[in-house]
View 1 (cartoon, helix red, strand yellow):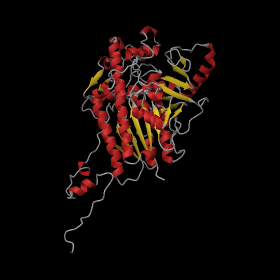
View 2 (spheres, one colour; view 1 turned 120 degrees about the vertical axis):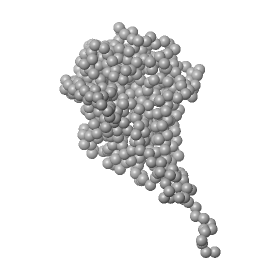
View 3 (spheres, one colour; view 1 turned 180 degrees about the vertical axis):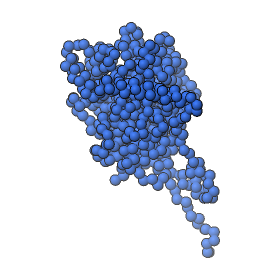
View 4 (cartoon, rainbow, N blue to C red; view 1 turned 90 degrees about the horizontal axis):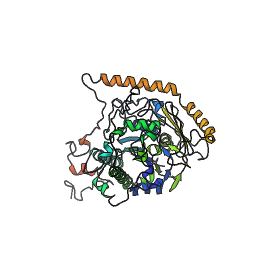
Length: 520
C-alpha cells in the first residue's frame, strides 16, 4: 500500500474566530469550508505561545517553546532540536518547506531536505525582548497601530509578492514530485504571510466585500483604566496611546483582514486542486493551521501577545484517508499535537521513537472532552511582560497567571467573551487551586525566568557586537539550477525530448514511423 503524503497549509496570524467552520462566517472561504465538509475541524484548537517564532518552534518539535529555548521572535531555534521534518525524513519521507517559518539562527532548514523560498522576517537576534526595560513598554519589532490607521487595499505589496512566490513554488514542487522518479511519499509545508498585519488587501479580494456587512467586534473598546494589567501593558507596547482609531479605520482593518483570509482561501483551493491534478488528493492528509490568532479590534486590542481567545485560537482542520468527514471534534487541541500526528501518519501507526519527551498528543486519538486529560498548556515569554506568563485551559475553563499580575480565571461556557474574571469567586477556588498546582508542576517559574533573562542579555550583547565591522547574515536563498529545469545544457541536443520530460502526465517520445537509415 502506498504511504500517504502530508500537506500542511499554514496562514500567519489567522484567528479561527472569523471562519464559517468555527461558527463565525465573516470571511468568504469556500475552499476552507469544503475542507471542513470533507474532514475534521478541531473546534477548540490553540497555539502554545501567541507569537510567531515560539509558536512555530513548538509546532515543529511537539514541545512547549520554553523547553526548546525559543522565548521570543529573536531567540535561536537550535539545530540540535529534533523536528517533525527530522522524524519524517528518518521514516522515508521527502520533506520540503515553501514559505515563512521564522527560524532564528544559522540553521534555516531544521530537518527540511529542501526549502523553496527565503523567509520574510529577520533570522538574527534583532527582535530580542528586554525585560529590564521597565520604564517604557516597547516591542523590539516596533509594532504600532499604523497597520490599522493605514488599512485598506493596494495593487501590490510585499505580502502579496511573498505569498504569490510561496504558492507558485509549492505548486511547482507538487508537479515536480509527480514528474520525478522519487518514489518516497512527500511532506510539504506551505506557509503564507497573510493575513498578518499590515491590514492591506489586494484589490481583487477587497472588492469582494463591497456592500457586504463587516461585523464590528463582539466586545467594544475597553478604556485603558478598565483593562487588566497585562492588557494595559500591551496597550503601551503597541503604542496605542498615539492614535484614536476611527470607526472607518476599524471597518477598513477588519474588511482588509477578511479579504486577506479570502486570498489565503483561494491559495488553499489552488493547492488542493493541484493534488487532484496529480492524482494524489485521496492519498494525502491535508492540514490547515495558523501560528496564532489576531484580536482584530476585539476589546479595542490588536494583533496577538495576549491571553484572550482571539489571540490564542487557531484553525486546525484535517482531511485525508480515513478522516471523519464533516466532524466537529470538541476535545482540546493545540499546535504541539501536529508533530506526533505527522509521525503517526508516517509510521502507519503509533510512533514511539522520540528521542526527547513531547508535549503533544496525536490528533488521530483525542481525549474524552469531559476528562481531566482534556487540557492545553500555553505560555507567553516576550512582549508586554516582565516575567513568564502561563495559561492553562481545562475543558472550557481558563486560568491565566504571571507573577506581576492578579490571576484571571474565565468560565468560557458561561462567559465566552471573557468579561467576568472569576479568580476571586469562592465557588471556583477548588478548580483554580488544582489548575494552578498543575501549572507549577509543569513549569519551574523561577528557573524559567532566570533562563529567559540570561538568554535576553546574551543575545542582545551578541547582536550589538556584530554591528561592529561587517555584519554577517544567516539569510537563506534557495538554490536554482536552470540547466535542470529548461533547455540550457548542450549535452542533450533534442529540444523536443528535453521539453517532453516536463510534461505531466508523461507521454513517451513517439518513435518515427519511417526512421531515417532504416532498410526499405
